[in-house]
Length: 120
Image 1: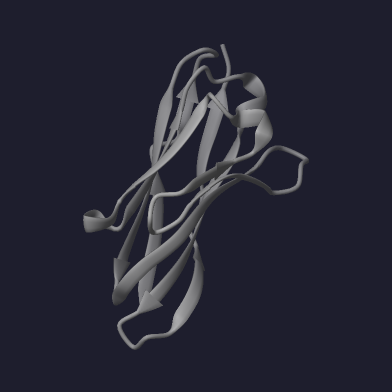
Image 2: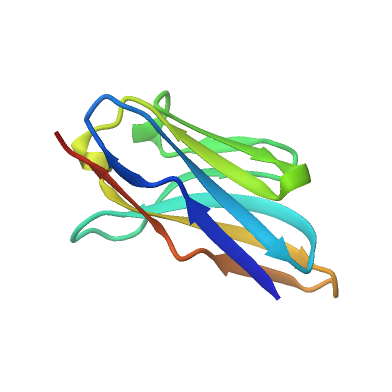
């Protein structure tokens, strides 16, 4: 059994920063590529950023320079640093992780999401 839990969301004023965390726990052999996604009100879910097990990163073009994805492999945790937040960043942010379990099954997990609201 593997659990994926996001945290760090909340209400923040425009221009401020937040750091989201995505922590995996359970029967994990390895945490492979991980992605952050978001779904704003009335919008489809979109990719924000991804990071491989080796640390290679990719970002949505519109977010480059403001968001940074990173990971701590020892803690099976991935972070999303979000700076200069804008009202249009308001969304539920989800973590998606490709994990190899201790029984060597490669599975795809989603967290429950964390709400980020950017408003004055």
